[in-house]
Each structure stands twice: as C-alpha cells, then as structure tokens.
Image (cartoon, rainbow, N blue to C red):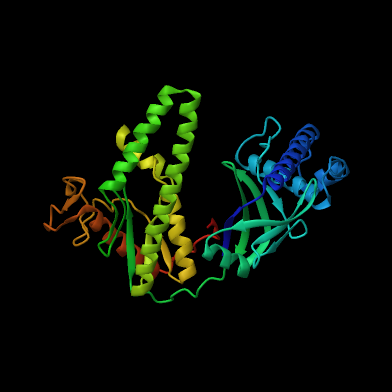
Length: 374
C-alpha cells in the first residue's frame, strides 16, 4: 500500500531563498516546455525529450531535474486530455510542486536532514521535522520520488512509502455498518455516533463567517477567508482521522469487518433544501471513507461497500421499506412491526446486514490501491 508522508522543512533564510529560486526555475522551464509542446502538438515523454532536453539543460537545469520537468509536463497533458479537450498550453504556478528522485535528493533520517539539488548547487544539512509515526514510516518504507512543495509560507517534502499490509481476516464474525449523515457524521451498528452538537455549531459558524467574508469582498476579507478555509480543512481532516481510527480499532478488536456506503455520485443523487444541501457538501465524506479504508488495510480488517439506497427507510427487524418510517430526523418507527430505534443506528444495522450478504456472496470489496497523505 502506498502512503505519502509529509514532513516539514526548517530552512534558514538563505536555504529558503535557494529553494524558492529552484522551484521558480523548474516551473518557468515547465511553462516554456508546455508552450513548446502545445505548439508542436507533441506531448509524450519521448517526444518532449527529443524536442527539448538539451534546451532545458541550457536553462540551468541538471540532467535529472530536466527529465523531471519533461515528465511533469507530459503527465499534465495526459491527465488533462483524459478529462477534457486541451485548448491552450497548460500552465504551472511559480511555486508548484517539483519531484526529486534519489539522485537529486538524499535523506539522512537519523540526523533528520536532507541533501537536495538546487539551481545554486547541492544543499546539505537541510533540517526537517514531523510526527514520530511519520518519521518511522519514512525510515523503514520510503521508496521512489519525493515532492518539494511551498505552501502557506512553509516548506514541505512529500515522500512515497510502500507500507506492508496486514493479512486480511478471511472469516470475519460480522460487519460493523457505518452510516454517514449530516447531524451525525458517522454512526456505527455498535451504537456509537461520531459528531455532537458542538461540532455542528462550529460547522455552522464557519459557514456564516465564510458567507460574511465573501459578501464583504475586500482584500483583507479574502485573506481571512483563505485562512479560515485552511483552518476548517485541517480541523475536518483531524476529525476524520479520529473517527476512522475509532471505527477500525473497534472492528479489529471484535474480529469484524467494516461495511461502508458506496457514495459514488451522492452529490448528484441527493436532493435537499439549500441549508441542508450546504451542510452535506461541506463535509469531506469521501476523505473519511478513504481514511477508514487505508487504516483497515493496515490492520487487516476487510472492507465492503454496499448500496445505500433506502437504508434510512428500511426496518432492520422486518425489512419493511416505507418513507413514513422516518417521522423525524432522529427517530425510526416501523409502521408494520412497530420497531422503534434511533434512525442512524437503524440505518447502520441495515448497512451491516448488507455488508455481510455482500461478503457471503463472494463479492467482497477489493479496495483500490491507495495513495494517502499522513
């Protein structure tokens, strides 16, 4: 399993200036090459190398950085053409990420320093820091390229690690169903609900502040809105990590698998009024599902994906489906058997049952290869 570890660089002012000059030079070369490729209609790696490799080196790039610029431009055109028609040259920001391989970047994990190529020469003794689990993964499993990125005034390196997977439990005792929702972000069939009034208040306050700043429209308001967006994204990511960790730990402890809703196309399928629509689209449910999936793979916990249709209207006891079974957001009351339960808990039981039948039928989910950031 691929895992991307992010570490923070701690450059001196002189080192930061050299790193900035390097990024700007590489991206300026990428923009020049992109225009040349678009004009000639030649965007493959081989074609670009024959067309412009020597000229890239004459622009101050060494051999390996020049090849990485070639590949970055070629990959950008390949990805763009897979989704749309490219009508103008692709452009790169001056501080866009730049890949480095082991010839351009070497790690000294014990000393927590790196040696990296720059346009002003080889820079040694560049200090980095990170969480203990990140540094442990970096020391044991790093493999392949690393990306240099300047973001929010800070410098980062993103290193790819090949993490071994734990053996998957071939015979789970059952499945923990996970129901995703607006009031409760995640509710499990074991009876645990992850959210709470305080979190929803923070989410609503953030939405109000964002709307106020957007309406004001001044430069200072835009700067503040950008900081607020970053703060919310970090908070949401942290919450998703904590929720996914709890779900996987519970499944591992009890010998169960995890059943998740297949939310592909959920934004197009769901029809809600504007206030609830904004709330639904403001939480990264896909990120939460990805976190659950990769943590489960590391723990050897099987994961299945089930169709979420009618799980909130179906009785988990008699399986009668009726929209009138939901008299309110929080209450489920079956109109046939009289079973009463918290609506989210009832839905999670249905998801758990569907997960078990999916597994029994031999269609267990093959979670796709994941590339994740720690």
